[in-house]
Length: 149
Image 1 (tube, rainbow, N blue to C red):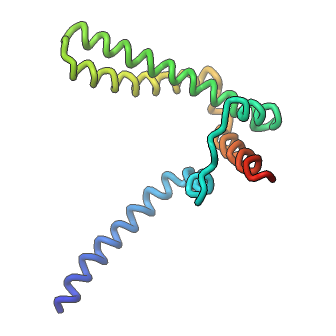
Image 2 (image 1 turned 60 degrees about the horizontal axis):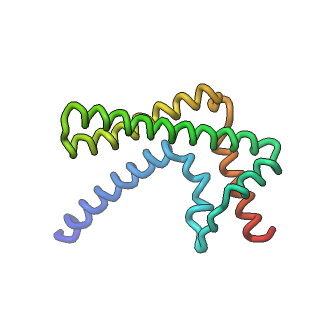
Image 3 (image 1 turned 180 degrees about the vertical axis):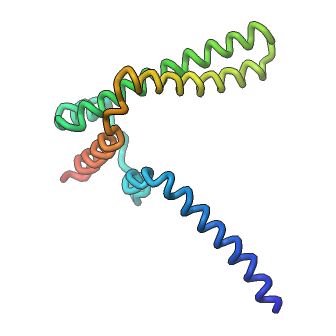
């Protein structure tokens, strides 16, 4: 009887853990597109800006999409910098609190990045493009290039 009571909580927890993994696995199933590139025995080497430009020039379908996605990331980064500096500046001006300024810097960077991403999404009309497919095609191209295929 002692064995039954010890195995029953384990199976109860395991059952709920499996349900939890299944629930979130369905919502983040898009991450499976990248698992073959991330979970490798030997990781892919880093690529350079010229490698990305070579892919953009060689792929007429996914190249322009990847280029647009990279432009959107630059806009987002600028938004993050502006958000971080402006909120930290205001926090420092009115509170002179080092920890409050540091928290404002971090929060402003996140909010600015998010706002910059939204601006880029509408300005560059990313909602019309499949940027994930372009990124996966680039990773496939890079893998084939590195492995010499």
